[in-house]
Amino acid sequence: MAVFTVNGQKVEPTGNQKLLRFLRDELHLTSVKDGCSEGACGACTVIIDGKTCKACVPDTDLLDGRTVITVEGLTEWEREVYTYAYGKAGAVQCGFCIPGMVMCTKALLDVNKDPTDDEIKYALRNNYCRCTGYVKIMDAVRLAAKVLKTGVIPDDLDPDWNIGHRVSRVDVEEKVLGTGKYPDDFYFDGMLYGVALRSKYPRARVLEIDTAAAKALSGVEAVLTAEDIPGENKIGHLKHDQYSLIPVGGLTHYLGDAIAVIAAKDRETAEKAKKLIKVKYEVLPHIHTIEEAAAEDAPKVFDEEENNICAHKHISRGNADEAIRNSKYVISHHFETPWTEHAFLEPECAVALYDEDGDIFVYSTDQSAHQTLHECSLLLGTDRVKVQNALVGGGFGGKEDMTVQHLAALLTYATKKPVKMKLTRAESLLVHPKRHPFYMDMTMGCDENGNIMGVKAKVASDTGAFASLGGPVLERACTHAAGPYHYENFEIEGTAYYTNNPPAGAFRGFGVTQTCFATETLLNMMADKVGI
Image 1 (cartoon, rainbow, N blue to C red):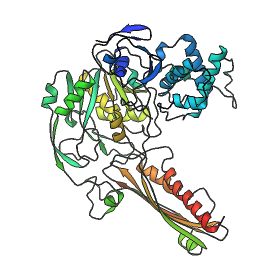
Image 2 (cartoon, one colour):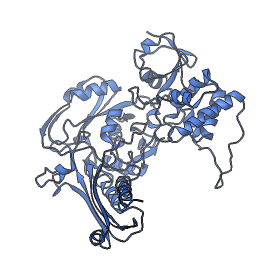
Image 3 (tube, one colour):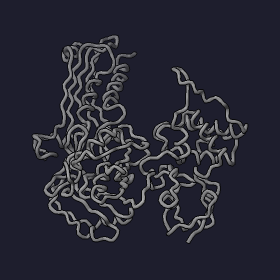
Image 4 (cartoon, rainbow, N blue to C red):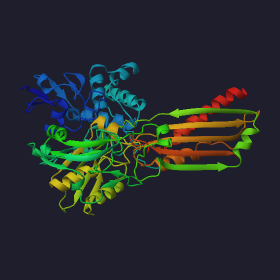
């Protein structure tokens, strides 16, 4: 068994495992963040023998005699320097990537006291930041280098909170030093780990669920299906149209639909149990494009709906047809925008437990603790629920909908034990709502001077398997489709369609980015045509 040093202490793991898991699960050094477990994001960066390394890559058996440093192992002086530099530069937002960035900064400045911009970029090349970008992080590295060189931290963190004064964020220290807690940073005695078995097919009828073998596996404490839900089995942001767990006889809507949830003593056991559950399906035709959803003979994503239309909007002013007909220049063009992934650094995670009052308490990472409270209370059929948002490692709209919070609460309700449920990066990509893809057909008419006379647009969005915020997003897309310009004639028609794709919902811009892309591109084309 390997013996190595972590932050000056000799350690010996209980068994061979990824360094990331050992640091977090056994040593509880939670500054080392788990963003992907695949060596991609850099959130788990540590220093091994003076060089940066993603902790999710090496096995502990390969580290015999090595020296590992995490943010917890920084000297008191280094802590002060990096907290000052990252705070003063404004480099900290959600904070999930920052401990990894700090370790890259330390590894660079330990050997290079005055790095060039290219050397800073190279040092940070393997670490992603989704909130801040890299300009301010590079500023922080330069500032840290200056402080380390002079040996003095300037007394210039202005405490004056009047308008016009610049101050550091109040949460800089806990995010730089990794002491602030995201849900995955909570560990409780006897805590179980939850996973979900998800649908094998995007559209199918569930005929049978056999959980016997999974329940019999040693280390498994609960295997729950829709029958075990004490309250309402439907959730949804604005419309309750999504099963928490697909019941026997129920219809799956996309590959992210949960069929069963498992709680076990560790992640590995839970994953083994998941593979032992047998589900019998009636596979049905599925829909994956707007054209398929709009076809007259299309299968219906929802049995109870008349068609696959989630929302329809019509906005008009003046007479766009006449204005365009009388325009000297007219351009029509078709535009498309794709699905877009939020790519927040922290995968969705929730920890549920019974508190001292006998209530189910949920630590969550989402964009509305009130929404989580409402949904969990409905699912459990009780108001004995409390929700507290821990730190959120990025969201951008992608964490407005429920993902794991209610399922963790359900497993705690059944087992009476703390349960942590966290999505893998692959699950996160599948489950949480994305930015809506849009098809847009637009026509613009201008006079000889390039003044806009009229605009017509017909837009269609793929809202995926559930309504989520598809209606409001479509409305915003339509109300902004004509652009921010002064003219009197426009007509915009929009339709959001259900498909068996992952759901689409909130994302920065909320539908406006898609139609404004089309409008602004059309303006560029028109300027070329008019010659201005």
